[in-house]
Length: 475
Image (cartoon, rainbow, N blue to C red):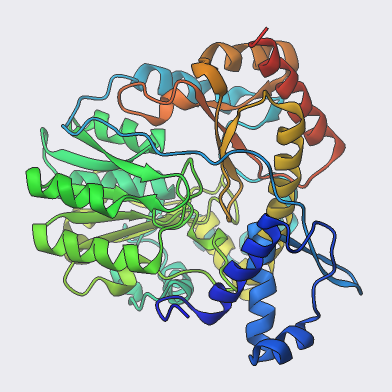
């Protein structure tokens, strides 16, 4: 047994391998939780964690009153990482990024483009009631200006939630921001200067690249595995050559790949960053969706004893994108962040901050997150089956375990940008073309799909139509 991995994970790996090689066939009923516990000499809770982990991976499905059943394994080939340029570069694709951002915000069709959950999966009614109650009960206070750090009650809620990621921070260490994007921008402003080198994952979220470009920084793209996340070996090689000033990284559910770094890789990353004096900006906006055995993985910030880690996240992916409520835990940069925020935005929307606090005190966000994860996991599994049937042969996929993003590579180096425009015009369907996830135009034959929807006939039809359009490109 591998002592570096939890026991439930090792057992889940063993069962996954049995399903993949056909020892356990698709549709076969698996032993009950109690039977698995007896046969392996483990507790009921550990056995349940095994099946929940396999369910998140898409290898088994739970049927009401019937137990767990193996799923047929996906036949789509796995996606391999690309080797980026080993030297810092200027970002040349910002025009395409800005065009896509504008077009995605105006798009009214089936939106596979923007990385946002459907309103059908969010607590819209609860938020509406909370806003109404806040206006009624708090009156003028509900619309008053806030101090730059944000509403103290909201910072208290955020501090409590960060315990789930292993982070023990005081409310006074937290600054509420206008989404995670402002948090990342503030972090870049206070710990870098024009001309500094910022290391990023490759591929990387285009919003981060836009922020880096706007501040006049250079980019160093680091090899990133579509399954295991940032290559720690590639980052260490870059540091030996010339350490970047900062590294922006998403260890849990990376955008666009959905990759999650292992615990060993995260620990090694912290060691390297501390050794070479590289500040880590941790983008954890999707971290809540990585539910390993029912709980989320720990954040880099939680183990940053010697490393310098600035933590950024938001409620946008689990509560409300439109509320634009994020936060940053800047550590030693707290005063610099506070001063910069005063100059730029002063404070945040008081009514929305108070309403979120009221809603979270009234109900369980955890239940909502579990339901969101369950629904989007189901959509991702069903979407993979449709893609396997309808997309061109040879499409490769980053088959991530968590989140609602799917990163694909088209066969034959076909450019996804013209197809992006055709899909929007002819089908009323969009996606995110791969070229916007690179500083220098790599990944032109890739695309990202947002699957943050409950599965329905409309979603399935849109995917099949998109598949037919892509097949046209191959004659």
